Length: 341
Length: 273
Image 1 (cartoon, helix red, strand yellow):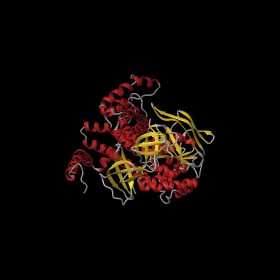
Image 2 (cartoon, helix red, strand yellow):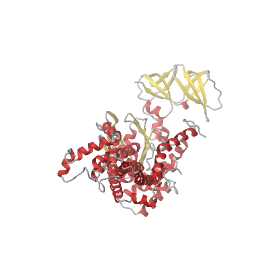
Image 3 (spheres, chains in turn green, brown):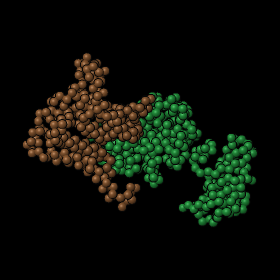
Image 4 (cartoon, one colour):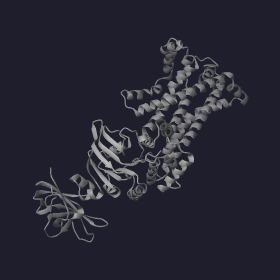
């Protein structure tokens, strides 16, 4: 089912949570709404679900205008951040709830068969008689997903699906969710503030800020070609240097960096990922002094101060000798330039 | 052993047991002891006398009706107080505790004044042919008044802690409002409702002050058990008073035991396995 948002607006009291967002999700696509807290991503998801109503604009499910269809008739599966499993029902009863209250009458045996099928899909066979309090967080998350899938939804919506889990479980569940999506091919939108999660899982990432879409594209597009400094910084660690653009060259402390077409002459920001900086004892490069060295399993992270006073972070080989207080030069292998202002 | 903030198991347990013994167990055992000093035949003839049985019937029946009424009304009140924000909410919230704070005799006198045939409510009702004061309905109203806070105050905190996402989840799965209330909200409120119900019923069984003014106290029809005990005491018939009181005590005990059992059943799902 294709989902289309057309200039959707939502205001809470005086706070405008979503400003005219337009977005098309292709049928069968897996999309991430990525943004910091307060960016409106959860509000958008809840409006698609029908848990909130849009103050303006339209939401289409295929050709049907779904803007005013209440949640119970909209045919969406929603997975809540803290699972929202019914604590007084067993895992099996939780998964069967949607079928047992449905207008479409099913026999007891039919429901049990479908519940068992879903338990198998989420790899929880044999746990159907447990109560939610008796299973782990990762298992609860999978029950929540099975419950959402039980009503054969047109769209699957997940609100921070892995936010409350520890890192290892999260990693496994992410891969697993992708497999389930590929198997069922159901249109899926999930909300996250974790850029790694979004890039790992989604076909397309929609980056939001202050209730507006800043950029959308495949993980490759947003990573390689961030539209502005916000997107670049949000997607990962970045060093920032200020310089001056002249004739499509950004100049900082005696070093020149190529700027993209369209960057106006004048003051500019230069961003570079820690992996894209190199350290050498002799020039050329931006003069810097090492403040601290942090050892990590795969490399050494160096925290240095550029001669311009700006902090720099970069990685060197694990074997490399480098000491706090050392003076040297930093070169930029790859960088992005944005005009300031 | 884990170090607790309040030290000394021996000391705190000792003090607690001493107080429970002094305040609860001692009077109750004196009661049982007094009643036991009657022979079985004599005991039975007192507790099964027609007047006593009539008093049990009117007390238990009125308490049941009052509790059921409060169950519905108290739940509705708790729901409105937790789910909606409206001007005057905090005042109503505070007023729920008034029946606790008000001397029950004051409540009884005001209710009698309101519901007697020339009172504000009573005059209207008597035109419709309904007599409240000096009938079992009066007893029920007095019981309703004094035991209302129990249901509200036991349900309210549970309702406040109920995750709104549970209702949203049930909605997204296609549940109608009534289904969600019946299958999701009500089962989660059941333990609290049972606790409030047992407290409300026990309180109604033992209520005295608020009832005697409005009940009319006719033996065999509007005389409650607590009053009968009081009358026996006035007559210096301590053994008979104790015998009748022991029936009340046993009823309250049995009822608390049953609700506790129901409550633990309703809370099965919280047991970690």
